[in-house]
Image 1 (cartoon, rainbow, N blue to C red):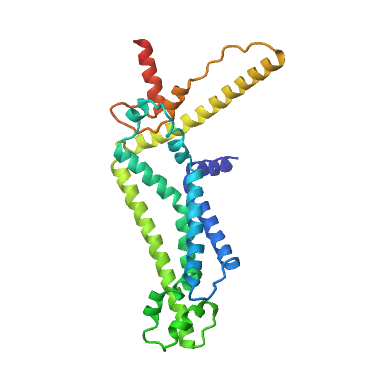
Image 2: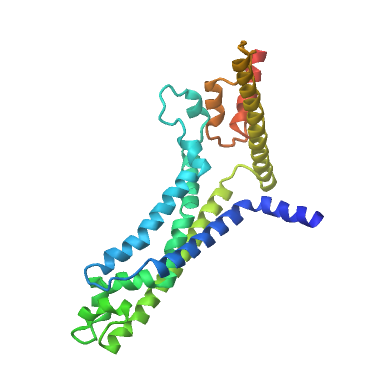
Length: 294
């Protein structure tokens, strides 16, 4: 039982890393199945390039949009942002320009995990690139200057193993090498960007290492307790309304935060050491108590 609890604690502790790892594995597996079952290079000088680009980029775009759609951070940023009558409270307590840019970069990088995984795995496999490059004029100029005159005409047939010349057919290996090199360069660039972004955000953090851990732990526990209390109050309110409906009686007074109070605790918050508030909810509660005391 203790071992199971220890494993569960590790899963909870590293749930973000495990989630991204699982997402990457599922994306990579889906790409391999998709490329082997659905993708069929037309081996045409007209269609090779657009056909391959559609299979390479459109699924990546769909994965990016789905990641944005399912992101809790994106939902929190977008919900009510275009509504009229917004309070100035959000603009005062919201993050500054640098913090907003950091949040946007973090959001974009998180949403880009699945599409970049798709493109990187596709490039390492080589099928999409081989088909696309064989139908492009720049690849023809690059690969065929020392080949026979019909090389440019036979190059689109290379992915289908239909090139008449063995020398032209051997260019498939070179195309695959180009694709795999591009795939590893893409993975390397992604790792470097993540390293730079993480280093900058850590260096610019106003918190020390353990203070930052405490803040993250507080935010996590606060959200859990808030959701539990919201569920509890929602159930009590629903039960009271249903009871009154069937009994034909008037509902008792039920204390629920007003709409403007929900808005105040829903905005993004950036920690400021001079205030020592760990969330927008923490700040709102303390400021409300101060107003009541005055």
